[in-house]
Amino acid sequence: MANDKRYSVVIAGGGSTFTPGFVLNLIQNEDKFPLRKLKFYDNDAERQKKIGDACAIIIKERAPHIEFEYTTDPKEAFTDVDFVMGSIRVGKYKMRSLDEKIPLRYGVNGQETTGPGGMAYGLRSIPAILQIIDWMEEYSPNAWMINYSNTIAIVAEACRRFRPNSKVINICDMPIDIMTRMAQICGLKDFHDIDFNYYGLNHFGWWKEVRDKKTGKDLMPELKKYVAKDGYWVGGDFDKDTEASWEETFKKAADCYALEPETLPNTYMQYYYFPQYEVKNANPEHTRTDEILEYRQKIVFGECKRIVEEGTAKNNMWDRNAVHSEYIVDICHAIAYNTHEKFLANIPNNGAIANMDPDSIVEVPCYFGADGVQPMATGMAGRFQRGMMMEQQTCEKLVVDAYEQKSYDKMLQAFALNKTVPDASVAKKILDDMIPVNKPYWPDLK
Ligand code: NAD
Ligand code: LMR
Image (tube, rainbow, N blue to C red; front, side):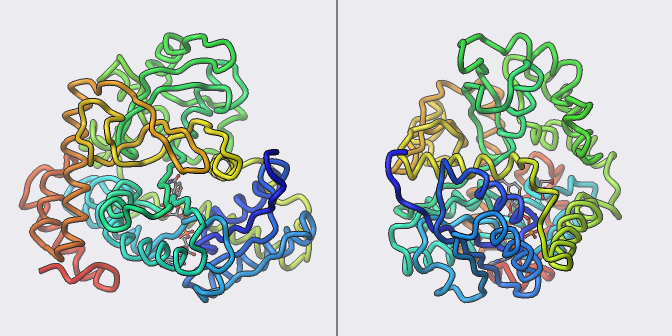
């Protein structure tokens, strides 16, 4: 290790379903990224307590040298920290459910981060994330924020506009999840064994190149053959815990690939390539939120309750690695030890994709180090991809315009322009249903 410093981390959104897995991962990777302090911050004390009490037991048993606390007080949370992990869901699952179900009323795709639901969620997240950045800068001016609170593309555009000099990096685990599958398909261990060139927007991108990191072997021919048939579905033991809707998503990648066979697609392209199929396939009464409430959230909170009741975290469900959080530990390590490892980040383009505007927010490979992220030049986007990106990123910018100008018209234009919405009158109906339920979170759109 290049230094012997131990780090202090705060997880903003301590009550997140991903928190215990992340804590276990931090502890398991202390040789890479040693900790002295871990804090949780949330604005829902009751929810956070359930996760916090279980994590206190995990830490006491596995890493008693780590000072641990959870709080709803921003000053306490953000003082003396080196890294802030942004994992908040503004409006929680109650609002996610509405993001999904309101568009479906009008035959439009209802999804967490895509289409009108994703834009609604993005508009809710902007002020909360800006506030967390401000607290971090006030109480720990040297800290970095690694944010994965969605809707990332919109949050990243808000950061570019309103906090251009802040030390915040917006990231996503979907490409890592897919690269873990690519590694499986090609007989490699995990995503660390893969080198890649990828470009796009968040939840909206394509692999141009995939190689075996050690040998340099081009894996695209093998992967293309596999994806054309089975998408990114691996099956067997690897997928034994994968939920039904994700199985469909990984398999649907075969159809996405068929549309543009020069690259390999991010799974989220399904919502833009096949919006009518997605709507036909959806149950407007039972969306992804319901699946999470019945499965992931129930399991996570059930496991936390069990740990607290039994007073021990022996044999807990997170002892198996969670890909989502492993990647985040890798990123902290790269920044703390200035390794210049390559990961994806959502940043202002500034030439990274040669034929996109400098001020576009793009998701591209970046070298992570003590100075933050240095983007890699990914080359030219194909004509098809560029057309898709121009439309989508304009929607994302219009949402931030709506926030900045408190403008109803900008939000309506964002919905009307989106590839998932068939017509402006439908966009208006969705927006008009969303405004009253989002009143506690959105600016007053005029
Ligand atoms: P969750 O609802 O389980 O937890 C989110 C927590 O945030 C809740 O405890 C809630 O009380 C808290 N919260 C909401 N608003 C807050 C605020 N203003 N200040 C402090 N805390 C606040 O959510 P989850 O499913 O665990 O997801 C957490 C976040 O991570 C979401 O934004 C989700 O979209 C995102 N996510 C990102 C990726 C990625 O790789 N980018 C992957 C999965 C999930
Ligand atoms: C989640 O909550 O898991 C999402 O971020 C992605 C999904 O599963 O819909």
